[in-house]
Image (cartoon, rainbow, N blue to C red):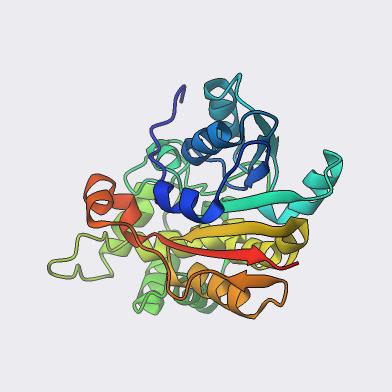
Length: 292
C-alpha cells in the first residue's frame, strides 16, 4: 500500500486532552496511518517533535514516506517498550503519550494478512509478521477447550464452545488457512442478530487477534511503565475500542498514584463523527495527567 486511507478517530478530543504545545516532545505509540501524528507534529513544531512507534513494519514504511520533512521520529517498537526507546534517544522524559489501540483502516484493507473477513490471503493477524505465530497456526495447535476459553475470554463470544467445536471438526479434514474460511465457519455457528450490523465473525476475529499479538498483555505493561516516562503535568491519552481494553485503562487511570484521572466517563465520538467514520462508534477515550 503506497498511501494511507486511515481516518483518525476523536482527533479534536485528543487535542483537547493531550494539549500539544510548540517545543514539546510527544509520543504516538500507535502510528498506524499517521492521522493523529500529522496534526500533533504541526502543534509541536518550532523545537519539538513527535516520536511515533508501531509494531507493523508496513505501517511504518507508508507513514515514513507520507510524513517526510515533518518533526517526527519513527521507530518500530511495541508501545510497552517506550522507556527503552526514550532512553535510546537520550531523553529524560516526554510531555505526552497517545495510544490509539486496535486496527487501522489500512490493516483492514490489506488482503494479504487476514484482518478483513473477506480476505483470501493467509490468516495471519500479526501486527509484526516477524514475531510470534500466525493465527492459522494457533487454530491448528489449540485443543477444543482452550480454544473455546480464548474466544470467550478475549472476544466475549457467547457461542465460543460451538465455534471451537466446529473449528476442531473442520480442521481434521481441511486446514483453516484464510480469513474468509474462518469467517464462513463462524457465521455458520453464530446467529445474526436482527437490526445489528456487526458481522457474527467479529468477536472471534477480535479474540484470535488479541491472543496472537498479546494485546492485553502489552497494554497492561504499558499502563505500568509509561507514567514514568512523563514529565510532571504530562498527559497520557488512550483510545480503546472494546470493553476489555477500556476496563484496563479505567482501572489504571483511577488507581495509579502517579496519575490524576481527567475523565469521569469515557469520551465518545459525536453523532457527526460516528456518521462520517463508522470506526469511531466504538471508540472510547480516557485521559490522565502525571502528578508532580
